[in-house]
Length: 152
Image (cartoon, rainbow, N blue to C red; front, top):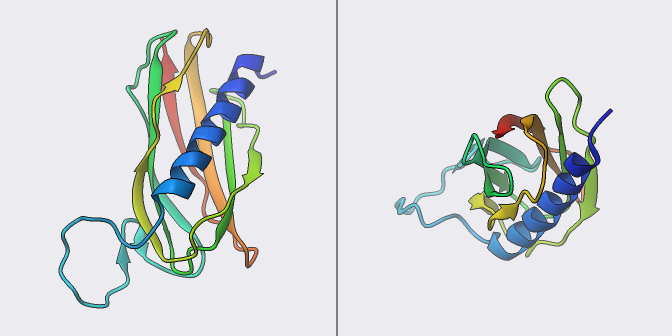
């Protein structure tokens, strides 16, 4: 059975990702690429189905009572992402995915996003799995990206 602190961490991470995604999404990033109309995005071709990539939790390992940041790439041509789903579980257990509705600006999303620090509180030491996906107003669901991280 999953430790209740893991569920709390997942809900907190969802809230912080929601805040980050709704405030950071806009046009393409400031990677300095020249003009041109290619479909290259942070996660490959930018399409109508949202796409996630490069999910990371850092530092890894993290210290008990410390903080972590979650980073990932996200792209969506219409920028109509309206659902954010995250989950955290002890390694060996499937993350219990919790979803929340969000609103974005409605223009192409092609960003690398890093959350503000997430306080781990008194989360128990161990290795955890973290999962993330998003959905859009058309009912498309992105790929689910996962990573593991350790709390010492």
